[in-house]
Structures are given as structure tokens and as C-alpha cells.
Length: 319
Image (spheres, rainbow, N blue to C red):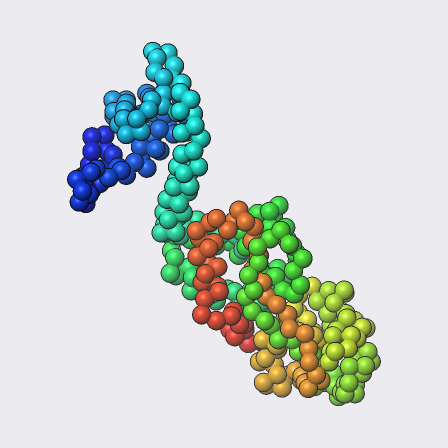
């Protein structure tokens, strides 16, 4: 180990030729920067929690090693020499980078803690996100989560959310995004509805069926490369209600497969146009650059993105 020189500067061992190597003086540079910023040796000592004598001794060691005075001392003030000013301008970025690197390492190894406010769509949040959060919180007891499940759009900054899970196309270019999963969609109807209406054989046949939609603007469906505007009968504001309305025989619906899976398996819903390609909806995690500095949020994102995409395989069975 290097030997400690007076004042805490670390001096490396002699080289084989007998000459002294340069001392490891990053701490000395940091102390010099603090002296200049505080304006006096006494103020720097108070800021660093060190006696003024220690500050003075380390400054003298630094000046001796450099072979030039850095500061002009007087009873009233402290000022930089020309050499000191140039030296300060050069070492300040070095000291700042070292401080930032130290803070990042400490942050990376700090135990995640604090409050995370999260918003997600009701169906996907309940089926896919919530189970992951329950497991996550068991492993990180110092993290608190305020989860809001709703299908409306939010502004992360003004509404105070750390993380938003959204479905579909993302237009918030100022936000950082991570893709979580590709969600397969299906068109479904109840057997009772199909008993009263002809089963669609091609995309154009869908216009003869009343549709249940989550929002009125979602009445244009892309099916097998074609775009069909379906006449909607009910706008629910919620994917779960959309599925339930279709199961109740009120019309056809375009919903995530995970949400209809149990009904498809037991026959209370029927998949329409199964051989035609349907769009895949993307589930995306969004957050601001500032929120991304949180150790708790970074840990949660790592967990959400780990091992496999977040599939909604825990979808609750409908009643």
C-alpha cells in the first residue's frame, strides 16, 4: 500500500531507480478547489470538517510539489496567483468529474428506497404490471409504490408520475421509452351475437356488425392489410368493459388476446377472422430524464425488463 505523507497525501513508493514517483494528489486537488470556492482556509476547513492547520499544510505540500505558489495569503483575503488561476481552471473539471463518478458509484450501490408513482392502463396494469410489482416490493421493502390504473392519458411532469405504462403508438419524444412487450390483438364476439348475425368471412363484413370500442376514435380497425371503419354502438373507456360488453352479446370487439383468452377457451367468446393478420399493440414504459436518476426507478425498470417481455399471462378469469 502507498505510504501516507503528511497531511493525508498519498506518496507512492520509490521507483527502482531510486527517484520518487508523483504523489497521488487527487484529494489535494479537491481541497485546493474547495479553498478557492470557499474563499479562505478557515471556510474550506469548516466545509470539509478539517482543522485550518490541516488545510494549510496540504496546500503547502501541493505548492511544493508543483514548485509554484498558487495562492496569495493575507490576513484579510485570499487570492489566486496567475499560475494558481490557470491551474484552477484546468483541475476544476477533473475534480468535478471525479466527484460525479464517486456519486454515481455510491448511487449504484445504494439500497433502493423511496416512493414511486406509477400509472398504467387498467387491463394491462392489472394482468401484467401488478403481479411484477408485488414480487418487486417483496424484494425491496424500502420502496413504496403508488399505483394508478386508468385508461386516460397523463402528463408525467404535471401529474407527478415517475413512470407511465402506455399501449400503442408513443408520441412523447421528450420522454425516455423502453419497450416492455408486444400485445397480440383479437376480434371477438359472443356466440349469441353470431347466432343473430352472419359470421364475418372477410374484413368488409365487419361493417355490418355493431362494435364495442374503448374510445370513439378507435373505430378504425386494421385487418389483413385493410382498414375498416366499424359502426360502434358503445364506447366504454375501458378494455375490460369492452370485453364484458362483447361477452354480453352487445356486439363485436377488438381487444388484447390476454384479456379474452379465458373466454375463448371456454367458448363464451369466439375469435373472428382468425386467419387474418391483426396489428400488434406495443406496451411501453415511459419516464423523464430527471426521474431516471432515481435508484428506485432504475431498479424497477431493470426488473421489468429482465428475463422476458412482460406478458399478461396472469390475466384474471372473468366472472
